[in-house]
Length: 316
Image (cartoon, rainbow, N blue to C red; front, side, top):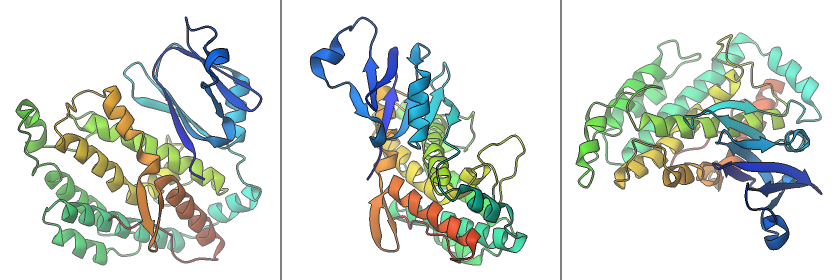
């Protein structure tokens, strides 16, 4: 079952009662008893985003959310996600899975990274193709990726991809925003729509990290990313082929002429649909959150030697 993503962008008191998340707003005392609508079964929740400095959340609710393998994201005063809390006891075979992950050989890690980069570049190519942008070089580079990607085709593809992804858009109603797109550079602190991409990737990262812990894997130990200050190296590895889905959502927001210089509630609402976007793995369509679970489950089996290929989606 697809889990719910809950977003809180106003002052709120969040507590728990009878295995429910109970929402109360300042100045609205009694709303719970009147409507019975501001409670959510904790077992139905997959991601919770806290995006206001005046949200109060009880410890008992945090414990219940984590016990049910929900991901808890906190945002700073600029409304950008800055923290992620996950359950580290989400699988009965966790200790055994940690061991197979830790014992993975270098050749196996290189093969897994090769599969990841190939699918990422292919999905980037298919996204460009869908939007009428030249993509033949990406298709070739996807086929050429070798074990461990020693030629760094991922980076070469990224340079071409980001140089071309937004440049074909013509913003007639908001022409003053066009200068952001003609020379777009993908940078975390760069011009919009980098802000939208950052927000979407943060949600995607939480979904992937949550699913990794659910599959008994430790998000910290990556197969390629290994920054000692990064607690989510494996999540950053596995989310790579899924990034074009976020790019597609942001592309359509920009294409539709919406002011993308600010993270408005309208834009956030659209980005919060990421867990329910359709993905196709082995000809089978499912919501992205379910697809990620298939991906992380297959990765765990690769570490165990039961599979040779990670189940990644193919962008359509």
